[in-house]
Length: 220
Image (spheres, rainbow, N blue to C red):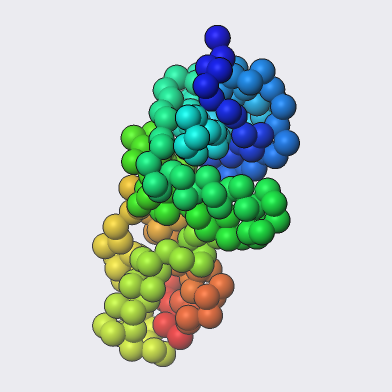
């Protein structure tokens, strides 16, 4: 039975291990948190596992509902209610987004898993893991990319030519993120690891690991 003391907002945000973040506005359902979430999950294709955030209001206090789902079906298997100041602050950001007072980019910054882990007291959020590292995160903000390249430049210098295995050995020292199952820097194939590192360097315009033939690379 729906809780008559709860006022459910019509915004739902889905965090999926494979698909990333999806925002659903103007959601009209059964006025029941679990039923509404499972209705949405049934109509969301290619999902794997993750959680749903939904702002709500109870006893004149804003809060968040967090519902977890996994790959076994469309059912919510765990849920939490958050009414602390951090949850209320995030609710305010969602409300301002709906009112076009906050940009989608700003909202997504607040909704990054890194940010949510720091702000929300939620075991569901803490347990969440992406399957593959989100491309935007790897190419733009992965701190390991900067660290590895700085170490390579310090050890060999720019313009040095080394076997790509030496670069791969430096990559092995990276600390994988706790919320990612598959890290591009931990690819089983050493050649692929170096290619992934180089792609991130090129996107950031930090430098280049250029293959020169005979399994050698040049650090530029």
